[in-house]
Length: 374
Image 1 (cartoon, rainbow, N blue to C red):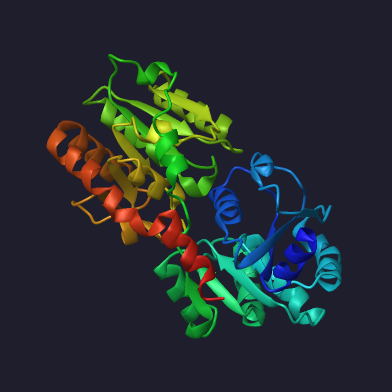
Image 2 (cartoon, helix red, strand yellow):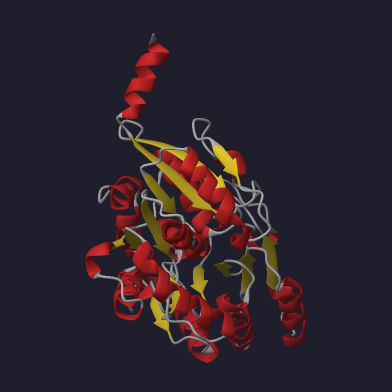
């Protein structure tokens, strides 16, 4: 009888299928896990489908969330198996939390005449046409996004780009705030750090985090560190993995700063480093709403970020809770690092004001932004 009652109750709930490629190391992967964990079970039931069932966060999927694998080599090979999954199940909403899934899902909805409501997610600046691939993706988005029921944007600036450049009506666009701050973050930031750069009698530590790819521009940060070291002793830790690891190691060697740089790899708990660093730096050329910046501020870190499109200037007020510097300007970055290291009072001011600046990313408020519009 209880099982029958539960089945009847589930029929009254909104059934959502979340769609991603994998559950790798990125910020959107963390966000997807948070959405699945904190989804209101009184209102919704959830399932998850992945292009391939792999990734470091796969084991964090809640037990009550079924996981489907499309066993596809690439996103283009997901069209038929995903369309089959949608036809065989009575989903109320398809919810993409991966920019890469947006175009295939829009194609499926159009080609296979799927009636299910489609929510797609734009998580980075949409006006990037700096390569043939980016140009093609931009044209496809402009053609296909009209098939979505809703387009979510992780920052106000991205929402404006979607409306102005992809011709999506403003009433179809929703700004969502990623659920990045919860009790787990607050607890995890107190874990000990076993690294010589964080020893008791240490010199100041700069921290950066992100995929080791070109858009994060860690080379600019290494160049800035070279300038800083001409005046102040300091160490740099970089959290993350990616294809440019060996290139960055070689570049640090060329600059003669290897002894002051440590590549920490991927760590499921970056918060323990964020809460202990002297300065957290974001060096990106492009972002969406950088989760690592939000989380570092929630941990009370003093912030220096490039004023890149998009996101940083929506949470960092220059001179009040952090510094904003031009993109790809290593000397401007170096000057601000030196200023913060030399001015303890200003650094403490940034640390004190940082957590209040990211309240909208607290779990409860952020979850409402993701689901109340449905």
